[in-house]
Length: 94
Image (cartoon, rainbow, N blue to C red):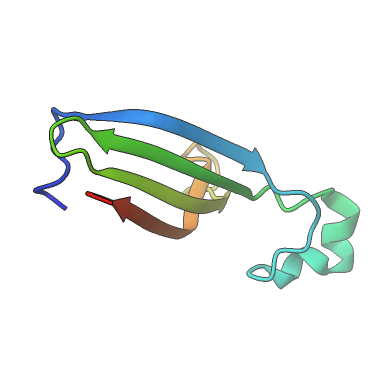
């Protein structure tokens, strides 16, 4: 990968991140409990993708990911999303 993508020659092509609807996430069955249904309308999880390419090598990579809400500390603001599923698709020379 280091030969195909360098920090000085890649550029972002496309980006998308959408909220997942409903509470039907198989990774988090606790969202289906009575208390979760009372307090939450959805799981607050997202699905997204980031596509970027390298100008010199011509390679393109699409990162597909899923996030969930996460707080590393109880009383201070922290990173709002935790990536729990990610995979990359790389294309180069066909």
